[in-house]
Each structure stands twice: as structure tokens, then as C-alpha cells.
Length: 611
Ligand SMILES: Nc1nc2c(ncn2[C@@H]2O[C@H](COP(=O)(O)OP(=O)(O)OP(=O)(O)O)[C@@H](O)[C@H]2O)c(=O)[nH]1
Ligand SMILES: [Mg+2]
Image (cartoon, rainbow, N blue to C red; front, side):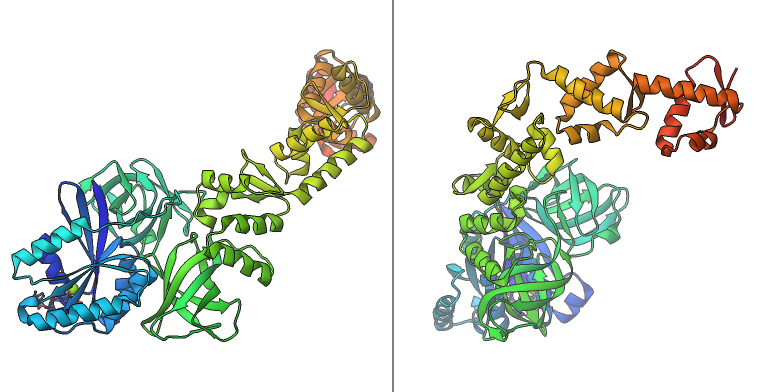
């Protein structure tokens, strides 16, 4: 089954709701106020189906004061049924709605010339001409048919129906992320909270977790319905009701975004492409109403290239809350209740960068030149540019992003960690690693231990540099670790044990934690741990606590001194112990606890005494 969402558009009273009823039998305008005023106020949802296609309708209001409801509906449209009264022709909201569809790239349009029973054939021909002419200025729209109809003429309705089922739907470029803006929410006794909306991208399954980034809350999807039928999953372009487990209705007002956790970050600004419509001017620093999905908030436009007005161009939109936008996401701008323009998001992630560089980035993103965009961003993120966020940042899935990265020169691509590094950073890493091996001739490190030390560099990036140092004859790889090529160690394990033991003996009663010792020696952690285990097995070293290893000689010496204290001072506690040995509390406690394993020591309150 193919699914398409077709929304109505057109001037007030031109017959949108009556036409939907003629097509589907669905009676809209059920609110008392809608009946009284004879106009549509809220969006309404209905559908029709044939053997292969399900067409879902979103019926919108045409009244100029209800524009915001129309816009909220329009974000879910795959195509549109534009309704024009055959006598009145194109009117202000016909124009405004068409501009909105054009800004949102809704593309395929069927125009229904309604109330043909009241119009002369000449009027109909004249309207067809005017409409065809008008569409010439709407470059993102395709006028597929103009069909004269009357709700009283069944044949015309059937013709329209066939055309709607056959309306080509442009395949949307998916970025692979589930996204959904709530348009309504309600509580159902026994089922909890249900929200309705349109799946804009990706898919969702029953039992899956769903994330509301604005409230940072996660919910389990208890049930899904598409056109009143329970379904195991819902896909892009499906009007979907989601029943959420243990969710409060108040969390889901209109405009709330639902997605999957961990893929989208929120920012209080976004870089965009904007264009004005209908002769409206977009002014630098102007306050506007931003519509995105079913969300409506205030925003400020800041131009990068002009301090005054622009017809179109690159801009930064500043919000007073965090928005979770994605690359390519369209938006509409309104001021004083009218549509003044719109555009799409180019860069949803706020990286501080110079204006000149930002403009270069935006120009590249605008023409989908991702290679240039990647190059700019890699240069900006010297410590590694993560392409894990490519879905949000570029609308690319990880494979697409990797393919672009691999085609680039002068960068290192960590395919596993999805991180890109510039060559200047690679050279820096060469220098850092060589300095370590110079300082510590007996350094024995792995990529893993170096990555723990450097933190910013990924293991594969380090491994790559280490291997190339081996190829250059500077390092050599032995027993899973890298050592200076010019030193000869016949038994690495023995050497590591000796070096650690040496340090433990020297540091006597208060040795450092093992990881600090390994770091000082530049020894791989796993190798260090193995050596300590072996020393402990050989009883050369005793483990006092999980992080305190002392040499057996130091331990015996100290225990003898503690016994003497117990004899002289009738026992020992932390205070008296400290008076003689000014160790930190961690060591004092560990040694006192160690006394408990001797049969002749017993505990009396906080004191240990000899029996
Ligand atoms: N004669 C005739 N009247 C029609 C036809 N289609 C609609 N109407 C009438 O036109 C009036 C307005 O129709 P609606 O369907 O409410 O118009 P609308 O476009 O939905 O209006 P809004 O939603 O408020 O923008 C109603 O009285 C309809 O009965 C038609 O084909 N022929
Ligand atoms: Mg209506």
C-alpha cells in the first residue's frame, strides 16, 4: 500500500471542506463555532483508499485569520488539492497558501475549480488560463491538473478522485531519523495519553522507545494507529496516533517534537536559507513568527551579508528556546498574521566560527556540496570532527557521510569511530607520540592506553600513527604493545614487573595508584595490570585495597611498627596512628583494616588492640 498525505489549500468558502465530504463522506466542521460561522477553524483528518493507495487528507481553514492552522497542517503535505471557486478565481489566501506550498516544496498540485454548477464554461476557461499563468511564478510547484468539479456532479468527483489516487508523490530524501511533531493530544480512559501527528521521516514500532527532546523524557510506544487501524509500525507520510505508556497529556501540547534518543541536539539558533514572498521585505534583526512542523515560536532574523533588507539569502535565526532542527527542514516566517517568507535549515548545529568561514560553509550546504562542507568543518575541529551527527547536520546517514569522507584528501578517516581528523592533527600526533618515547625510552604503550592518555584522539587514529612509526623503523610492535625500535628487551613481561616493583619499593608505605604508576612509566594499562597480578601472586606485592598495592617488605616493616605502637599505647586508632605516620586517611584506614586479619589483634570500638 502506498501512503500519501494530501492537504487542501485555498481561499475561505471556496469549497474545500464540502469537496472532502464529497470525496470521502467525512463531514468536517463539527465544532459549534465552525457550524455557526460556516467556516473551518481546526485541521481535520480523513482518508480514502483504493486497492493500491491510501490518500490521507488534511483539511485546512481558508480564513485569513486562521493562517497559522493552515501552516501547521501544511508541513505534513506530500501533495496538495488547491481549491479555487470557479467564479471568484484566485483570491488573497489562494495566493498566500500557494506561496506556502511553494516554500515547503510540496510540489505536485491538483487544482479543483469548485462550484462549476454555478459557473459558465467561459468563466471556467478564463480561470484555467489565470491559474496556469499564476503557477509560472511558483518554481517549486508542479500544476498536475486543473479539474472543474461540483459537489452535485458525481462524475466530476470521480474524475478528481482518480486524479488524486494517481498523483505522483515525490520520494522524500530520508535522513533515517524518526521525526514527528504532535498536532493534538488527548487522554483515553484506560489507555493513557494518545498523540496524533504526521511521521515526517523514519519509522516507529510498537514497543520502541520514543524521545521528547524538549522535556528530555523517554516513553514506550504502547500502541500505534494509522487511520483508526492498529498497526505494528508507522512510516513516513502516515498520519499516526501514538499511544504512549505512562505519559502525561500535559507534556504533549501542539508543536512538541518526538524522535529517537541520542541523534538530535538542540540549539537556540540555526543557520538557514531564507526568502521573502509577495513583496515583503525581510529586515535584519526583525522579530518574526517561525513555523516549523506544528511548532510556532518567536525568532529573530540576523543576516550574514547585509545590515538592512534582503529578498533572500543566508541568515541566522535566533530563538528564545532550544530547537531540535535538522538539515533541510523547511520553515515559514510570518509577521502581523501574514506570511512574509520561509526557507530551509542549512546548519542546525551551532559551531562558533568566523563569519567568513560560516558563509563558505552555508554556501556549500546550500548547493549540497558536502565535500566542501566537510573540509571546512574538519579544519574547524582540529581535535576530530565527528560525523556521527551527520543525520542532523547534513541529512546524510552514516554510510553516505563515510563515502564522502573517504573521497576527501588530506584527512584521516576513523571509520569505526566516525571521526575525521585533519592532516595537521595527524602530524601533531606523530610529534606527541615520538616525544613520549623519547622521554621514556622504555615506554610500552598500546593505541588504547595512548587514547586514554590523550582523550581526544580515537584508538584507530592513534593505531594508524603507531603503525606508520613502525614502518619508519622508529617503533616496533611486540606482544601487543609498541616500544622503541632501538631498544632490545628479551623479556618484556619481566622488565615491566621489575620497573613497577622498583617504584613500589621506592615509594614505601604510600605508593601511587597503579594507573598513575603506569602513566609515569608510559606503560600500557593491561600490561601493567598483568605485571601487578604476577607480582602479587609471587607475594612480592600485597594488595591492601583495590587501588593500593604495597611491596611486601614495606608492609612487613610497617606492621611491625604498628604492633610496637599497640604494645606501647595500649592499642591504635586512626588518630594515634596519624600522630606517628602522617599518611593520608586512605592509607591509614587501609593499614588499620589490614590488621584485622591477624588472630592476635581484636577490635574494641574504634581501636585495635593486641590480645
Ligand atoms: N453550489 C455549490 N456550492 C458549493 C460547492 N462546494 C461547496 N459549496 C458551498 O460553498 C460553501 C463553502 O464551502 P466550504 O466547503 O465550507 O468552504 P471551505 O473552503 O471549506 O471554507 P473554509 O474552510 O472556511 O475556508 C458551502 O455553503 C458549500 O455548500 C459546489 O460544488 N457547488
Ligand atoms: Mg473548510
